[in-house]
Length: 279
Length: 164
Image (cartoon, rainbow over all chains, first blue to last red; front, side, top):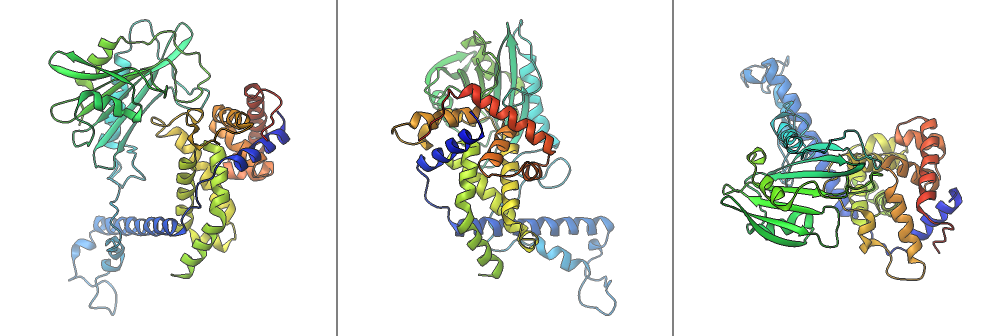
């Protein structure tokens, strides 16, 4: 394939692929306005914080700092943008570990970020004997070890971590996803398991001590993961533990494992492991 | 509607389709392509006055689009599907559909930055220097990534490629 082949192939692909209806300008405009308002809100909040830190805002309206103006406190104009417009109902992102609002759903420092890291450490602590845990990136650019903490749409938090596990030149992965107790996920163990990433599959209920765990032992048509277990604690916390023969969802460039690292009972037991019972 | 809103809406109507096509080639999924376009245009709206003053709308949106795509590859990839396993956005069974599926699968297998270089260079017809500016890297990196990307495609796509 040369450059011209690629150009032609891309052109043909786009021409022949059914295109969705045009995107709506009004929707884009609404999203843009909302982002602009949020930006103003954050800027206003930042200014107010600085002023409060300096002790100016705390002085209250009794302190007039502008010469010749005896009616308006100096801090007032700076804090006005912090008042959301009535039409802006979208909540701000949670405060990150650095005391500032998160840039998006993902925590980049602080308690939530550390919880994500804890999930990764939990995975690394339970890797079966005989496996090593490579680091760096796979051929598709996906990290071989990673963790993430993200606030979900319902206000709960999801802690996600994945670690590649290698043995005999093959590389697969173990993956854990924890949802804090106020999540809206399914209650029934197998419904919960099949709901994971929308993967479906054939589920079996299994018992670990007094806990009932749903385990998808055979995936459906989507083969991103090979097996996974799901457990909901009585307090509502949900833990998914998954394993796959391949190292990433994409094309890792790594030879897959010949066998999965964990047995089904081990997978189910890990879903009830207290190290993943996080808030 | 303010002047800014009217100009933004007009620009969106004129260019969002082309940007979505570029995004589709990057990610192989129309839904995600629309998310990328939406993210890029939202940032454009916020910085409209500064960007529009310099008549740099297309380069700005394209740059944000590409960077959002690459950043997405680093973050939040957990639930993402393999493009080659989501044929819903690919053409219905027609003659030569396989060639297009093969291309999208092959592109999906190329690392994100290489894929971005290939799309910018050979779909957007950007020069090496323009692509380097969009990707915030050196022209040498663009050349090497393009060469590697093409080599990867050669190994993944059986010759000859005939998508028509």
